[in-house]
Image (cartoon, rainbow, N blue to C red; front, side, top):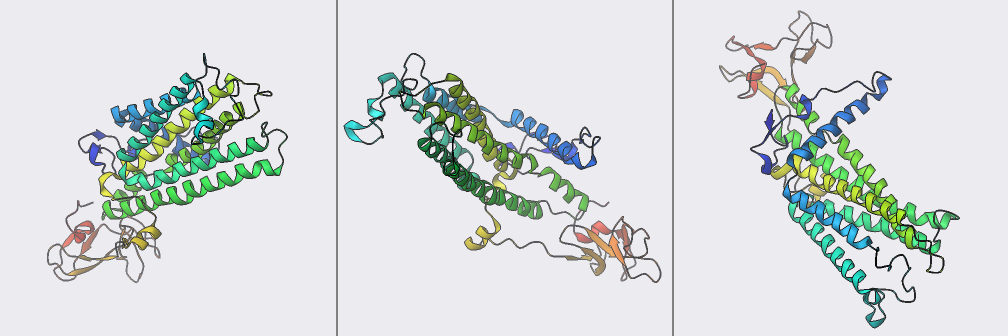
Length: 385
C-alpha cells in the first residue's frame, strides 16, 4: 500500500490504495497461447483503472458526466416537437444569418432545448479545463480532433446523404483525412506527450538504488489500457458522428427519420465523452502536482525545460567515504566487478557474472578501510538489500 495515485497526485495524498504492481496478472489468454499474455496484462490494468475510477471520481466528475449526458439528450430531443424528424426548412441555414438564420427559425421548444444543450457543453468543457490543468493543452488537441471527425462526416453526407452506401472514393476521402488528423493529434501529439512526461517522471521522481523498486515504478505507471482507451474513443466517436449525420442527411422529402439512429448517436456519444473524461483525467491523476504540464521532449527543449537524465554514479564507502568499485547505472541497477579469480567481468548484484557465471555478491569490501557493507549503502541513505 502507498499513497493514492502512486503518481503523487496532490489531491489524493491522504488516501491509501493498492498499487498496480500488487495485482496478480491472470493467465486466461496466456494458457491458450503465450503470445496472448499481453491481453492478460491489459485485462488486469483495465480492472485496476475501473477500481481507480470508482474510488476517486467524486462530485466533480459526477457533475461533468451529468452535463454531457444532458447535453446529448437536450440537443437530440425531438419527441413532441418534430423539428428534427420533419427535416426542418432546408432553405434556411446558419446561426448568424440574421432574419434568415435557420437557427432562429426553429420551433420555440427546439430552440430552447438547443440553447440549453449548448450551455451544458460549454459548462462541461469549462469544468474539464479547470479540473485538469496539466492536461489543458492536450485536451484542446483532442477537442480539435473531434471537430475534424464531425466535419468529415457532415461533408461526406452532404455529398451523399446515404453514405457510406453508393459512395465513391470522394465520399471516403473526408472521413479518411479527418481521422488521419485525429490520429496525428491523439497518438503522435497527446499520447507521445503523456508517455514522455511519464518516462521523465519515473526517472526523476522514482529513481532508487534498488532496480526492483524502479521496475515496480514502471509497472505502476503503465499506460497500456489508457492507450487502448484512446483507440476505442476514436472508434466510438466515429460511430456517434456518423449516426447523427446519417439520421438527418436526406432532404425533407426523402427523409426516412429513424429514432434508432438518434439513440445510437446518444449512446455512443455518451460512451465516447465518458472515455474522453477518463483520457484527460488519468494522466493528471498519475502525475498530479509533480509536473507543471504534460509535453513532449521536443516541446520541453523548445521552451528551455530540458530534462537531464541521471548519470552513472560511483559508489562511496559508507564508513570512510572513499570511492568503491560499485557503479549505479542510469537505469538504477548497481553493478560491481566479479570477485572470481582471473575474471574481469561484472554484473548486477544478485545476478550471474556476464563472463564466468559466478553469482555477483550483494556486499562490497572497501579497499581502503576493509569494511564489508551492503552495496546499496554506497549510494546514500537507502534501505540495505
